[in-house]
Image (cartoon, rainbow, N blue to C red; front, side, top):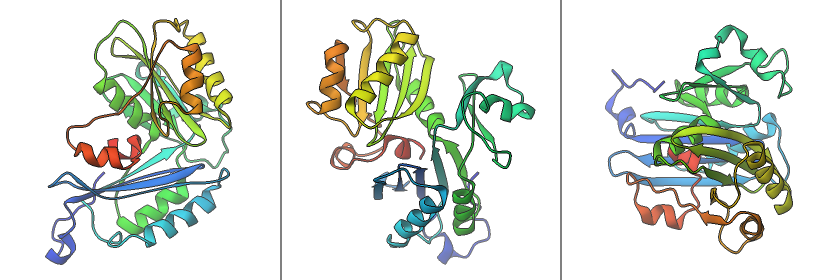
Length: 277
């Protein structure tokens, strides 16, 4: 859904060439403003929480962050909110029934009777992502900007990586690294083999989740391509520990020709936040 601008006075449409993407999760939040004419990133902010937050404190932090940005109260051509959480389940489209949403989540996530459960269709790949969004965040964004679109972070990540990955018989494991979270995607021959979201405290925790996921898929550690991106670089604890067990490890720099490369290199812009625009 995009915000309608028909019959709006010119003064209110001056900024409708700008898009806003906001990602929110219990461990942090980020937002990005994009000029759709010049493809220039006009603003980007990222906040990591020292300890896992609550929906109430997340909203308070988001309000504070947005209030510090000049012009954030203006009109946008599109507003997208990305919900990053472990309360999700991927369902093959052939087995999906929108009347059964709670049943898809109850076996691997703790849900409340009052939770609002929604779903994203992952276009062209016959998958549906069922999840619980942060309702208070959605309500606030609607009050602030009107109609907007929201998705789960896994939907954005899976779609973007499947579209960018070349067909290869050998599996490729992508891991987006954040301060306390990791999102792991395994793709082979343009097909999704695995996606999951984990919270970790140490590099050893990170390695455990990585190796456990690859073991469940019976993937040869000598052949798989492991591509790390996000808050990671060669020589840090996570990279070096992964390299002890996986032969082919590299830092993956997602490149989208739509955006100036120098902007992506000089700013630690969240891949999911940017890819949703």
